[in-house]
Amino acid sequence: MGILDGKGAVVTGAGRGIGRGHCLHLAENGASVVVNDIDVDEAQKVVDEIAAKGGKASSNNDDISSRPGAAALIGQCVSEFGGIHILVNNAGNVRDRSFLKMTDDEFTGVFKVHVNGTFMCSQEAALRMKEQGSGGSIVNTVSAAHFGNFGQTNYAGSKGAIASMTYTWALELARYGIRVNAISPSGSTRMSATYKGPDGKDVELPFIDPTRNGAFVAFLCSDEADYVSGQIFGSGGERVVMLEQPKYGTQMIKTGGWSVEDLVEYFKPNLSKVFEPVGLMKTPYPFYDGVKPPAK
Image (cartoon, rainbow, N blue to C red; front, side):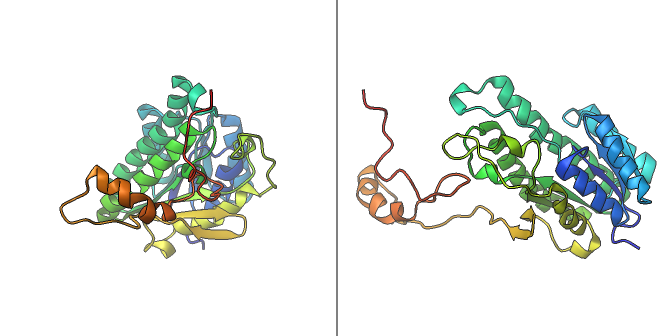
């Protein structure tokens, strides 16, 4: 008996890497899995791998960033496995370029897959879960890139949007027994190979087995985690770490409100000392000497 017996699951972008690991762990714990990927041959390889271990799975290559594709994907899970109880939004793409050089197509192309795809698949799945009366679990995928990362305005921005959607959906869908969480996974994949350091140069990262996020996803999708919603976790490797949610910090209050003159006098000595570091690498705040245009 597995902790996901009887549950129908969908994993997007699951033909390789992190998504493949999600599928293997979900199936190992009893779920029947629709393996979605734009490369249907890679998706079928995962299906065959699951079947060889006695699990149930089917392949799918619908376009998750379109409404018809998202509806067809969720519909396949319902028709083949009797319902949809788990959705893992893993599909993604990168089109890295520095902000001043990024094209409209590069920006919208990444948002279409990450944000539109996550929204459409989640809405289709949640509507079915509500209709079934079964509750369910949605697991979104964010990234530490949404802290800020060189050359990734599109990717970082999309992951920040998904984090905010995760918090919102957790509030809205709880009444239907639907939990919504997100992971920021670690693993060596084709996408991680594009990573650049804060200086914009390529960085060679150590190998991390991308399948090692899957056990935590399986746990999040089980009834053993029915008390977990609206949370974001770092997963993979040897870690499970909670990401702190956005919150207000140090403040200044002045009766009657602040004038410009007051702010010039009081802002720097009171608030500048607690400025947050910027970016994924979290180096100390670098701008105390001012941000100025190049000398002519």
